[in-house]
Structure formats: C-alpha cells, structure tokens
View: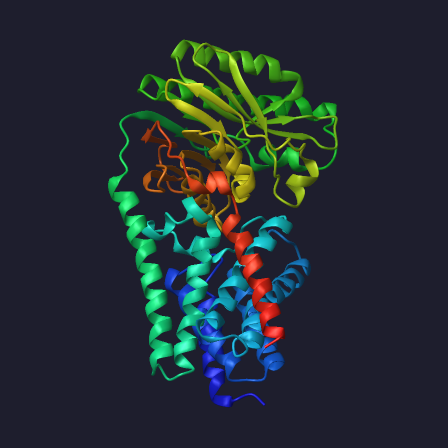
Length: 489
C-alpha cells in the first residue's frame, strides 16, 4: 500500500521533471527530480510506485514536449505514453536492485540504467539524442567538457548518480560511515571532473581566427505558401512553375546580394540557412553559375543551404549544402542524411551519411545539415577527420529555438570544432571548439538579418571522436553485471 505521505515526494519529483526536458529547462531540476522520485519508489511497493512515476512523468512530458515533437493528433499522447514507459525503466531497475547489491555498488544501478536507456533510445529512435538530460547542463562549461571524452553519456551518468547517491544516504538518515562514504566518493568524482573541465577552458588557446557571416531569413520577401510548396506531396503543375520560379528568383537574388555585402565587409566564409535558397531543378545550373561568380569575384567561401525542387518527383526535395571556393569551383555538395521524421522525410532524398571536408587557408571545413546534428555517430566522422570549422545550415521553429542550438553546441565540444550555424526561424550562432558562444542572432527579433563573428581556425583533438561511445558500452556491461549480481544475491 502506498504511503500517503510519500506522495509529496512523487509530486515534487514530477513537478521537477516538468523542467527537466522540453521547452522549459532548469539545469538544477535534472539533478533534483530523481532524488525525490527514487525516494518515493524506495518507500512503496515496486509495481505501484513505478506505475505512479510513469503517470506523473507522462503528464510532465505531455506539456513539456508539446510543439517540440512534431506528431499530429492522437499520435502525440500515445508517443508520450510509450516514452514515459522508457523514462520509468531506470527507476524500476533501481527499485528492484538497490537493496540487493552491496554498499556503494547499489548507487550505480540508477545512473547505469539511465545511460543505457538514453544510449538505446539514441540508437533506435528517429529523434536521435533528443531528451538527454546532459543537454540540460548547457551553460555549465566545465561539466560540458566531459562530452569531449565520454559524449553525452558521462554527463548523464553524473547527473543521475546524484539522485541515487543522495538516496543511499537518505535511506540511512544521512548518518553513519556508509552514508558519508557515498557522499564523499560522489563529491570527489564531480570535483575532479569540474576541475579538469575548468583547466581545459583555462589553458586552451587559439592563435588565429577568421571573420565569418551567417545570413538570415528575409521576412516578407515571399509568401509562406511558396516556401512550403516543396513539402506538398504532389507533382508541380506546369501552370504553377512561372510564379514559383519568380519567387525563387527573389530568394536567390537576396542571398547572393547579402553574401556580396558581407564579403565586402570582410567575411571570408559566408553561410546560408537550410533550404532558404530554393531553385527548380531545371534552373539549378544557371543559379549555380551565378553563385560561383559571386564567390569568385568576392574571393569568399560560400556555403549555401539549397533546396532543389524536383517538380516531377514524389520525393521533390534535395536538401543540400554546397560549398563554393574563392576560385568559383564547387568544393563539395552534401545531401542531408537525416530528414526530420514526418513530411520532410516523406518528400526528401536522403544522403549517404558521409559529411564532406575541404582543406582551406582557414582550416579544414566540414558540413552537415540541421537535424543531422542530433546524431553523434554521424558527427564523429567530422571529429575523426580532424576538421577545424563545422558549417551548419539549419531551420528551426519557435518551440525548439534554444533546444536545437544547445544540442548543436554539444556536437562542437564532442568533436573539437568551431561551429558556425545559420538558422532560418531560429538561433544562429558561432561557438569555439570548447562550446563557448562567440555570437548569436535570433532570427525572430533581429532587424539586420546577418550575424558576424570571428571564429578559431584550428580545432582540438578529442578523445570522444576517437573512442566514440565506449563509456556508454561500459555502462551497458555494468548494468548487465548489476542485474546478474542482484539476481544471485
């Protein structure tokens, strides 16, 4: 039977979970929510406790992720209900094993299970690493540096371990040597991580920078129907083409003119957002010649987010990033690997999952497109290639403006690259290889739709780009060992 007084811990933990992910995040909530939910579970029958934790986290998730997860109608609450089941599995593992393992080993069950849950979800889900509690620690720069060694998993482990460690001491009324030992071991571990991260921030220096510019979306230049026509899953009628071609030409002229202006102001690399520039397949060659001329005349590297509209194909969109060098030659063309689940995935041609690189006088340039950034295995190719500058055309919406920027910054830290991200309807940003923000531009409020920054031209080699998710795999092995040990204890 549920202890009626313990329901207070359930309510507090559920309330904190509301700020643990989604649109409104408070970093401290990620540390505190498991403290109260684990304690509630420890005081009550396992199955009933887990059922109530599932219910309250489902309610929190329903409101926190509304508008973030692009699912229509009844599909959204069903998805949240299933996702909430996954959220409760670490609590179930801890509840069943915490009193069957010796000493401090019992505190490891919850963080191990949490990392394994996030790791499996990141591999299997079409939404990639969305929802990782590590992202909530954005702004804690010393802690963020751990991502350069373990990826997100190490940060998630430390955050989750706090809850189980506090409960180990709480179950013992914070008295005695075992409780003190648990708190000391955890405190020393976190202190060492923060000290190492702080040292990395304090002692890393870069010698050269390059002026870069990100061009924003031109409000009111064309109608939204024009922008979204490529996402309509039906062939383009011949009668539609002249008007659409004229509107696309307005966009093309705008971005070419803005690129000239920024190049003449001193920018050496100019970036456009994702599929801001639309062009019909039949007009692509003519447009590309114009773009090559601009790059050649202005002596600038031009990375263009381009949507090629294949008017006679059910998969009408080629979502590309094309780099033109200062000689006017096309250095590379990259097709988006991970279209967003839903209508974009339905109408898009997928890329082969090989981010290109180009050696330049400003370092080794690489690119991926928007949603690709939510998949660390793809981005590790950028780190392993020892890239220096990552150029990211992106497109967001008002519900994910901050979230998507944050996730992109973690990819820069993981792979040791400077990042320039140009976002249509979102937050454009420039960050250094340690995740420090150098410039931002909110497309919704900026009067002048151009962001300028000086970014380092040399990257930083990271352990994570070499060993990948080794820490996560060790957590998988650790959880299996804990389960086996618990079954035979």
